[in-house]
Length: 427
View 1 (cartoon, helix red, strand yellow):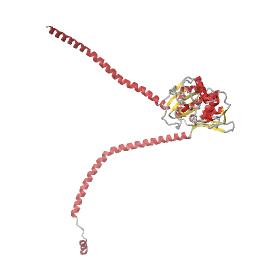
View 2 (cartoon, helix red, strand yellow):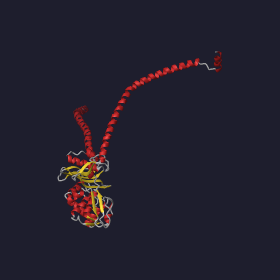
View 3 (cartoon, helix red, strand yellow):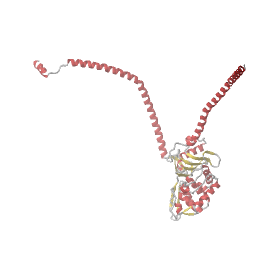
View 4 (cartoon, one colour):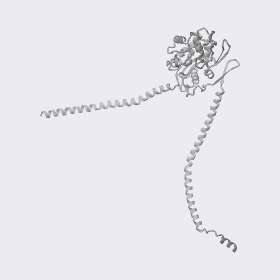
């Protein structure tokens, strides 16, 4: 009896447990369905989010310039920027600080003795000789216009006695201007060997240039296309040309400085003025046609159009490529500079028109060939049918030829010259 009671109790508790579990099953299924739905939704949404971030990052990384900033002078409005606090080598843009310090020294009319140390530098150089005397303002012109390294070192040695002392003064002056992320090791912009570590940022170089353009002497020198001056002892004439191709290729450009080393790549600080709008551009480590990009960025700034990276940054063509606006400058009757398209640009334009016409002809020919091909495809079945008929006729004809040939063989008798002659005589 106790065993029956125990068995009954156990079976009853099992039945209750089964009923309880049956009640829990719908809840478990609903929770499971919710988790599956959440997982499925995550699987759908997460790739889209990642794709959005990846697309944005890839677009940002596709810009072939390490860092840049485009800003209107006199306002706080930054029109375009990328990694403006990223430390990179500024190359010869360093000379802007060197020349600013020379201009602010108040000794521009002084004669500077060229030392041996000043001449022992790499190109580009003006080619000064040891012992020559060049006015400080002419050294500034050589450093800014022609990016002459010997001129930059001559300025440093004259102002501070030696290069190391001038570098200390450079870094101190940079801090005063507000260049917080820059460190200079030489007055010319070298970035290898004993001069490694010469770095700055797009933001710092913009602050430096905004400070420099407040000085009218700097502005006059920064827009020069050629620097011509004489040595004070022998009266030797130096004539140095600018490396800033933007002055020839963009009508509103007014300087300021170019730079290049293998490590720094193509660097540019450019200024353009149009309709009382004054815009500065700093571009560091450009791996594309910097003149073309600068012209496009200035056009965007002056037109007020929202920047479009696809149109601003073209496929890389190198600095040999021409800017979008290729111009030649001349003096008009009024003495003002007149701009018109260069012959090369006109040839390029005419070639483009000819190519477009040729393209249209090729397209027309392609359509005609396509039509012919369509007709040929339509005619192909008929030709095939005709071919089959021809083959059939050919077979019939060949059979007939064989029959005729058989008859000819049966009726053929060999020719006997003696018999033929006898018949001829008898006749």
